[in-house]
Image (cartoon, rainbow, N blue to C red):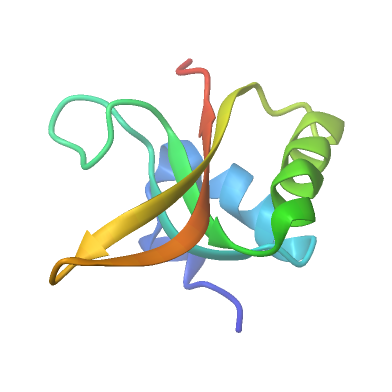
Length: 92
């Protein structure tokens, strides 16, 4: 399913389009900064161990300025959920 791009923060929209268009299953994004959910531009996505490396490779091929890649778990009702991926970008 294609994300509703018009509802995505303008500062992260291109990166979400690039990753989603390349088959990365994104589920959360934010352009970052004051008043936003994340301090820095961030996209969260699902995938296997290789998916994170693939996402970084795709982002770099498109000239996106990747800052970090993380694999993380969320604790929900005392239980671990995940893992999922999080890629962050250099703020412009």
